[in-house]
Length: 303
Ligand SMILES: [Zn+2]
Ligand SMILES: [Zn+2]
Image (tube, rainbow, N blue to C red):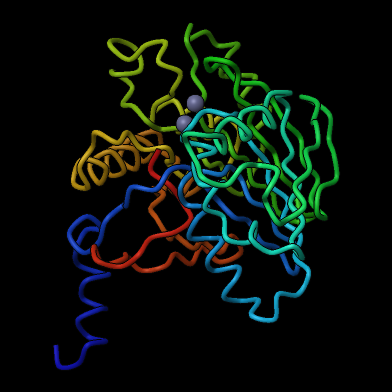
């Protein structure tokens, strides 16, 4: 190895992700982009870094509109909202789309004294709320968006998002508490032929079936089984358990790939694990190299 590029290539091809980088610790926030269109999924702590990037790309403060889909108002999915830099610009408009009718109240409470110094009504940007109906497809920002109710305390909603050529399913904070075929069948129908499923793989199958049963989260194996049944092409393990170290998350990813291979599906279902700053191009499967531990993180989330 003679050059830094040689070193990078060696690290990417010979070492595990957890040896060369970190999965990070941001909570749920994903941006999907297609041509000029984009949607943000959830407002966890990753939203702060995304906001900084959006502002850096818009130094003239041209009018900016941001559509956000919210799975549910649990704290790890809204904690980034007060720190979303575009909210400081009066030329920004934000629409938060959700199936819950409690979102505005949750955000106002989060912005209220003594939790945050800027009251919700003093946000410079124009923030509005739009209600979605489970099972009904709505056009949002040029995407066709269909929600589905999931098992989770207070309900959570998955989204099937189609840009006309590709389909991504975002299904986090979901549980299959009874382990019945019907539960998995309903999810498989919703995931059918998706190009990618971003799935709540917080637990192992054993954890989800025993001491973490009814904790509101699913497992890596459940995600793999449903994706194989659905004919989905990629499974992204998401909403990692914050208890896990990087090497444990790497093992979970390796075990999931091994499980898929044992089912004979490794040539039809690719499995990846989300990490902070992951940038994935659905058309060619390009994944950004691992991020060094000291670099700032953004986007995809641990929790
Ligand atoms: Zn939750
Ligand atoms: Zn969550």
